[in-house]
Length: 404
Ligand SMILES: [Zn+2]
Image (cartoon, rainbow, N blue to C red; front, side, top):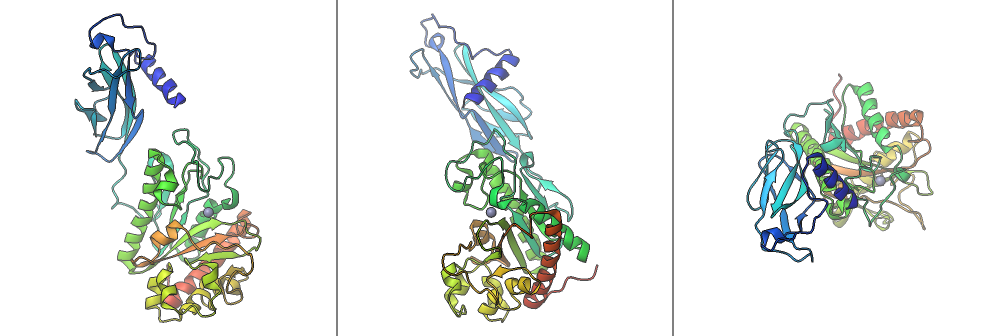
């Protein structure tokens, strides 16, 4: 909050508007007894044009007691927003402007930003689209595949205060998710090289202390309006990709790309099936299918659910055949003992098919060495993943990538 005040004082100084230094008011009328004006909030964001938000302002006397003095609202740049007599601001175009609340001979300012995102129906495969301030990047593709990377970002802007609970992470290191951003881009490039076609990718570039996009918005953004907007953009881009794929193909696979630091170096595949679930001998049970993020595929593919999750032609089984350890798979059906395992988080629940829709989902948790530690290992793994996903699409969805 201190930095906001300094910024506002600076803005006011620049604008030659006086309100930071307070002269004792010697008058006796209510308006001349105004000592200060409290405005709230100090910053605000309006997404889209023609939308409104409200500011409030309270004049106070030198004892900080509220006064019943009218507020006169104005805006410095009236091409960006308009403001009415009650502090209700309406967005007109993208930009940032101070708004001013005046009472007596005192005034206070706040900043309002308007962000008008590009329309959602103009995305072209291979182009790069960014959300506000470049915190999210979306590169549309033309395959029925979507990859998202929520934890590989390292941007730490001052406008977003650090999160205080949950997995907070660090601004100086991406921790166990290191290199999941370049890994995701490498997989996209490997598909392009091999097939001439690309998956959709969505990458969060904010560091985890600022936003954890693999959580519900409450824990993800912890009340910060800029973080909340970025969360909406991130999941909005995934929704755009899902809609595009659903219309074009009628099916699709969403993969949430992560890195783990668990002791066993193997890919952990999260289908929303827990370690205990996977330790069940036979997974072909209705309740197992219904809780999984590949519920739709399980109901249309005709393959036994156990085989779909960990048979030789499951994602894990295909990875193992190409020399990459994965659980669940036929050689490694379930974590055992005290082995740790990630079964899938918010994005896998939201964007997979457990709760409906045409897109199945899997959380990919990658170990570090040999998969994502160096460019050469990322390329090696990306080429394996291209083969695995090609086969998986063919076998389970009955769809082959056309020759380019
Ligand atoms: Zn992660």
